[in-house]
Amino acid sequence: MGIAKTTSDLESLYGEALAQYLAGGEEGALHGAYEVGRLALASEVGLLDLAALHHSALIRILAGAHRQDEIGARCSAASQFFTECLSPYEMSQRGYRDAVAALHLLNETLEKEVQRIAHAVHDEAGQLLVVVYLALAEIAKDLTPAMQARIKDVTDLLYQVEGHLRELSHELRPTILDDLGLVPAVRFLADRVSRRSSLAVQVKANLDGRLVPVVEIALYRIIQEALNNAIRHSQAKSVWIQLDEDPGRIVCSIRDDGIGFRPAAGFSETGKKGLGLIGIQERLSAIGGTLQITSEPGRGTELLIVVPKENSNGNSNRTCR
Ligand SMILES: Nc1ncnc2c1ncn2[C@@H]1O[C@H](COP(=O)(O)OP(=O)(O)O)[C@@H](O)[C@H]1O
Ligand SMILES: [Mg+2]
Image 1 (cartoon, protein in one colour):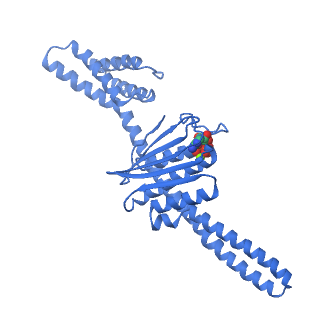
Image 2 (image 1 turned 90 degrees about the vertical axis):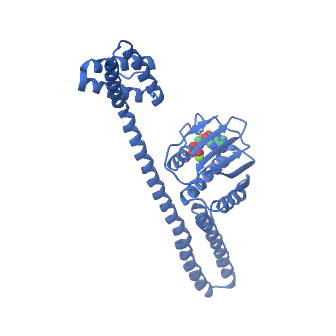
């Protein structure tokens, strides 16, 4: 059987296979049910549409039956047929659940790796620099005052490098996120971004207390990517970040007043599909959140994110306007 494209193709395939099964086709015909299910799934027919298809086929099949026992037998055989038809959907859902679990694990592994790098940059580079300061001080003892002044210039530069490395490590995995939570970490990030770019970043937050760590980390990373996008692509003057709490869910909006884009395309200016928005989507998939992108050329961009407060693995949707 080729790939069915339309619902009416599927409707006749379903009807034929069901009629064959009811006529006593048994195993082979039941395999036909599985095939119709597979084709329906490949043609992106939803479960509700499939149920409607079954319903109309059943009505046709029952039209010729008059006796109660005959109607009962046809109904129960048809329901067996329908169940078999659903098994490709069941398998695909199981695959989806496995993929979400794998994504979860991958995120955790990546986070641990980022944390390790952040610590290495902070602690190990810091310790090495201390050794360099001591060595320079030792060398300076034997030098003329003019050379000592030059060594001091180098030492000052190294202090600056150390400062940058410390800030970078905090940005990679801010200890403030682990210690104080999402809002202080986002304020810290917004402050850093405002200082190193021409963007004015405002944060408004109405969140009480801490969120589960996986939600805090996901939202922090998403806001970080949204700010990177605003710096790299938007030409915006301002970005507004708003974090609110509804019963059971967190709503986060990141809005800029930049040039906007067509979100449905999702392509970067180089023509390659960007990974940032996909990454946001994947992070949200792993925690059952949703993303809505509202953007139009010339009219700024808003990412609206909704995440269940308790982390639940589950479905997520992205809609674009
Ligand atoms: N805030 C924004 N303003 C304007 N364009 C944006 C914004 N965010 C994303 N885009 C557009 O969407 C594309 C995809 O973004 P993303 O997935 O983060 O990939 P990347 O940043 O690597 O290009 C960007 O290349 C850009 O064209
Ligand atoms: Mg990006």
